[in-house]
Amino acid sequence: MIIGALLTQNTNWRNVEKALANLRREGRLSFSGIRKSPLPQLEEMIKPSGYFRQKSQRLKTLSENLLAGGGIDALKKLSTTQLREWFINQSGIGPETADSILLYAFKRPIFVIDTYTLRVCKRHKWLEEKASYNQAQTLFTRKLPPEVDIFNEFHALLVRIGKNFCRAKKPLCQKCPLKQFLNH
Ligand code: SF4
Image (cartoon, rainbow, N blue to C red; front, side, top):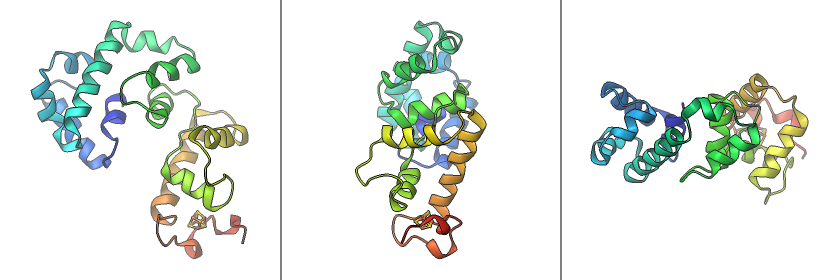
């Protein structure tokens, strides 16, 4: 899941699945597998996910840091704040990727903000146009009970709204289930 979160940056999940399948087939779908893979071989395996040079270097560094620090079991012992900080300090991991890892891989109650969520919130004026990632996250954290399942479901629903209705251009407000919450 953590490897997938890094590979999914700037691409779609179908391409990530191809890269993950390559890693699995070669027995390298693990941090130790990535650490021992020569860089050119790793690049070849993750090529379908795009930006493969940058991503393979990041995956290697992440695997080395993670294993040097005691692996996943050591990370599980960290508080949510410490864990988030650990991931954000890794090369190529920003707030959205870190929060996805915390929510989906570590089951920590952290709300993930993405482009869809920001767009919906701004169009409904729940957030200002210039609102930051942290401001958006605070909005959901204040309004929702801090439960992993709720954060997970809520985020998934917002992504569906974003993909099916709240498109960047020509949003389909008339057919959208959130139409009733628009302030015209
Ligand atoms: S009603 Fe739906 S499509 Fe329209 S702005 Fe709201 S979320 Fe987007």
